Image (cartoon, rainbow, N blue to C red):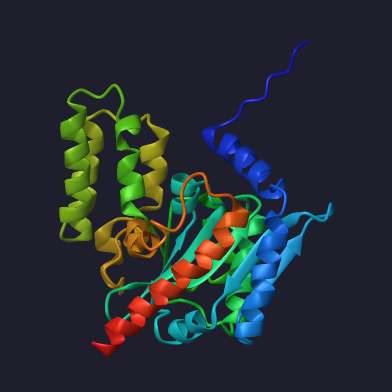
Length: 292
């Protein structure tokens, strides 16, 4: 008898990412470690942590620049943990901790290379990152909708307000509303009830009417989404400071400085020196804004 294993798109992505991250191309790991050693020679406060698996392969890597530490002391009100941009755009398996400074610039507060998107990896990365920042917890954090990230945040920084990226949720609507008559109208109405509801009572009324109107009672995604409404619906989150962040797309200002330095064909070995140039250029722009 043949046994079938059911996999989800996320399972497939995890497998691909794990293969890519643990089976690095020749010279990749050496280039990364050399970069870390060189940075520490230039800057004694530069921090990095390398965790290896039982086979000696890179498992999880975290690093924080000295100016990121200084920035975090002032700007840890709200941060964004972006786990998708560099993977999706450049095939670079990195995640970024991003904040916002007084000039409304996106600022880099830490970087990580992860072996997998599981709870253990997220807890290890988060605890390592916080440990280097004197365990000062952010007041609020924004992430994509991910059970593993949520579990790590609940375990390590339970008093930090956790918000889901609203655009990540909106992007799933075409699929989740498949088969619904007037899908485009339904999508627009969903966005309106989330963004335009002026209080909790109005949101609850509009949500109930919306589910009934489009007969969505039997759709699990909407049911589970409603159970976590405090993490993504505006009226439940407006009492907190978000520095203009509504989504992880707020960190696009951070992403933009990678453009021109790397491409989808860049290997990790090539990425390392280009990353250093990009970081230097970004920091110079921050200093220029401060001077002005």
